Image (cartoon, rainbow, N blue to C red; front, side):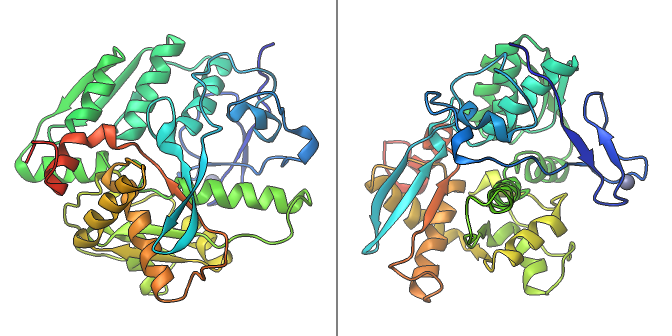
Length: 345
Ligand SMILES: [Zn+2]
């Protein structure tokens, strides 16, 4: 059964609504576009025999069975003891390409197959680039990825193996630094926060939940656009000094949907937490010793958890879920250097 697109875009700038069945980059007013809210999901609409994200297909703006699936979604939720507290970890690191990006990519690629758009050009050398290159290969859509010279080698190999047309972006050292900060920071735009906010919003409207969990957005202090705006009480970009960080996946100097992400965090009564480089490495090690091998970017969540437990923001009896966004296999050599293990130091 083919998918039938029912999605519409809504412009956050002027409110105009557009059909999502044709190529569209921006609104006529030049704003970026967001998908309009979906119908939500009732308990009985879950496809219980489907062990992938397609068990929730009813909640997506697509209908029917996907044309392409690599088994994305339905990742484990495991309980571990963190500093004496029982915490649940959502292992998005176990996705087909090793990061949570496969959720959005799988839906996007099936949408593109439905409306007949291709080829794909993507400027991320990080988890999004690897995910899109892989799913493009699986679906036969030509794909070109632009990457900076400083991109993490493991992620570059992952992109290249898919057969994508990899284009190196030349430039001065400063250009490359800026390109690396911007292009590899593909998980630093707040898409996880926006997705969670949308999902809980739809569940609340469909009557499946009556209370919404707090959302905590974690950043590396070296590159913390959301934290700078949060601390200034602003809902838009506030200039700040960006430095390189070992959390390369969230090194995003200028996120696009700042106001929407900050609004989502505020209405959940959560907060934005910025963590130091020297705090990330111990969390990376502690996660590893719990059997949770993640990339440095994902370890920032462990760092923030330690702090939020210590200052009483999160109480031990509360249910806490830590989303681990990417596998350590993407950055094994770098992790070896950081922790002084594996002979790579
Ligand atoms: Zn508009």
